[in-house]
Image (tube, rainbow, N blue to C red):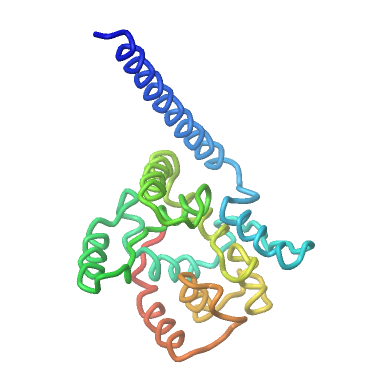
Length: 235
């Protein structure tokens, strides 16, 4: 083999080896963070930091509304409403709802564009904790890896607890406690079943709705969620 070719092959091998080691280090860092947050409450997330930067482009003194609320202090009907709305099979799956994914793929194929998603609560938490809103196959692959890490380390109760505390419920409003105070002027523990269903209803697009806003779509969606709440299984 010519010397130049041998050098080129060695260079390629070293580059591939470096990339493999680097990728392993990145995954190890994510895994370590998941273990840490299994016993420590997050004070911020990647998504929260991104939103704060956006707010501070308009107002340099902007701050997020965020207050941690322990799982046992959250009203049961809020937990049921969110599970019923976002991930009905949450307790039973291992991070991915394959049936919902298949249905979403079929629907998107029929429409010729992305009109439906099938992200579970675990997947949404993986994205919120670590990733950006960028849409790419690389990001989706990383989301899947982190989802597996969350499910392998944390209990369903802990996953839901963190999710309810870091989910976005308005412009700069994160977590159930801040959401209840922002939209209804009350602590989360005082939410009614209807108010809990309303909060669950706006989760997919929280920036579209002002405080306690009622629209025909929201009224219909809230009614559907309320009808499913009693059947929703929560950890």
